[in-house]
Image (cartoon, rainbow, N blue to C red; front, side):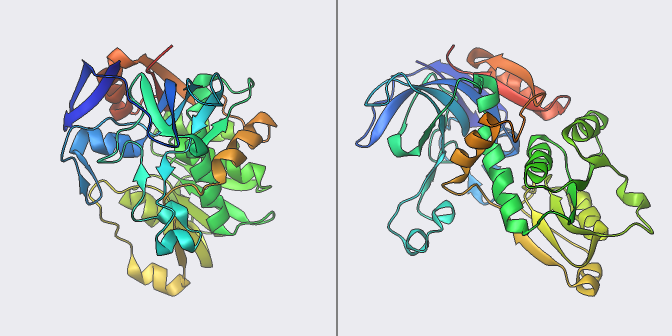
Length: 328
């Protein structure tokens, strides 16, 4: 099979490798669509995410869908939950499986991800896809699951005001998830003009964080870029006693904030890591029922042989979601 494997920062090579052999409890999947996200870009550009570094060549990709080739589900189109918890540690016993420190995560070293024609993955981490969700859009279901978890963590309810800082794909999905939750008083900002257009098309009201004097503060702000300026803006726009949800991944593994503003407002900070085990099924249901639209978010589609070009397009940030097709 063909595989796109990262050997070092900026060094992605397409190679032929043996097809994977599923372990007990796993099935073989023909991977049809993989979305690239910010964490993939960190791996590609820096050879690391947070404190985890690239020790051996790695196959990236965790926003994936495909067709099951083996077992009782053979022939079924599925979306993959990329997080495989150990199920035995104290964190898992506390039903916090998505925080499992022993678990595997597709595309996070040392576990290979989905930028390969075929992939072996646990059968119980697959969600069947309806025909209404096309393969390119299905790559957005995992990030939608993260957006749903972020909204859950925020505690926001209908009638509250929200802000989204950072309107890449995850920020735009947060905007759409908020609307599905009944939140309509929603402002959004991104320094890139095309993302602001996408945010407005998604239902957010564009605003400039530098000119917010006199405006009522929001109840919850979502920081979805990992950028220090975006975090500072999120703090500025949040009302006293409000909440800030951190979703973005900082490039240098450091987050700084203006302490005096945070103290004066007594803000609550919540960090969103990944989706929970039920969020992928929720995401599929919301899209299938037309409560959340994925329209207009996939802007670039590449074949697996062009994976390095796909990462170059992702780094340029001229579009929105970049998708790779490992197998047709």
